[in-house]
Length: 362
Image 1: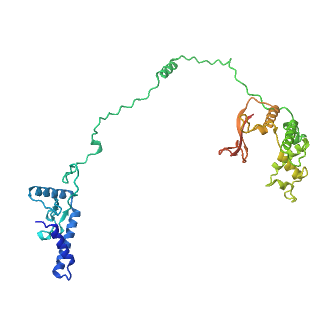
Image 2 (image 1 turned 30 degrees about the horizontal axis):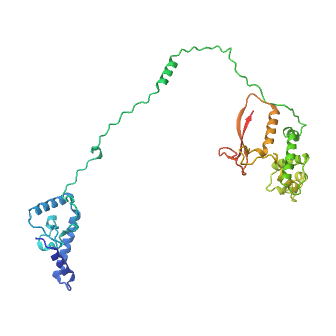
C-alpha cells in the first residue's frame, strides 16, 4: 500500500536532520540514491507505448478500487506506483519514499462545468495535407483556354491572304528624288584673307553696335562708378582679348597683366589695362536692360539676355552658304559647369555637363 505524503515528508526530514550517521545509514542513503537514479533513468528512457500501457493499467486499477487517496485539502490525487514503471530493485513497499506524486487540480472551481480533456486519449493519426478534406465545396480548376485573336482581325487577315496581287516591273513613271546639291559658301576666300575677315563676315558690324549700345545703357542704369562710355573699336578689342584668353588659358585673369614675364601676355596687356577690362566685363550686356521682363512673368524668356545675338547669328550662318539637299538634325554639347537652370547632365556623352544645342547639320 502506498505511503501518504506526511509519512514521506517525515522520513525525508529524519534522513536530513540525523547527525553522526552510522554505517547502516550510509548504506541506506546509497541504496536510496541508486534507486532514485535508476528511476530517473527509467523515466527518461521510457517510450510512448510503455507510458500508454502504464496509464491504461492505472486507469483500470482505479476503476476497481472503492477508495481513492485523499490529501489534506480533501481533493483527489493520483499516485503512480514505482513497480508499474518496471524499475528493477524496487520491490518492497517500504521503498515508496521516491514515489511520483501527481499534484491535485486547482481548488478554484469554475462557475460553469468545463469539460476536461482526458489524459488517456489516444493521439489522432497523422494525415498528410493532401488527404485532408475541406469542409467547404471546392471548385475544380477550369482548363486554360488558348488566346484567340478577335474576329475582325481574322476577317482582315483572310481577306489579305485571298487578295489577288499583280506584280509589275514597269517603273518608267516612278520619280526618285536626286540628292546632288552640295553646300557651298556664298563668299570665296583665298590665302590673302586674314582670320579677322572670316570673323567679321559672321560677326557683323550691327552686332558690335548692339553690344556697345546695350553695354552703355546697362552701366547708366546701374550707375556704375567711374564709367566711361565705350565705342565700337574698344568693343572689338574686348572681343579679341576674350578670344586670346581662350587660346592661352591661365588660372587667374590678372596674370595676363602680371609683371612676371612667364605669365605676362603682351598682346593682351598692350590693348587695355586690367582696370578697364574689369569695368567692361562688369557692364557687358547684349539685350536692352530697359525692356527685360521679370522672372515671375509668364512670357519670361530664359535666353532673353542673348536673344538678339542668337537671332542675328542664325541669320548670318544660313546666308553664308547654299544649303545642300542632305541634312540632318543632331545635338551638340557646349561645356559649362557654372550655375544655370538650362545646364544638362549627359553621362554617356564626351562632354557630360553643359548646354545641349539642337543643330541642323549639313
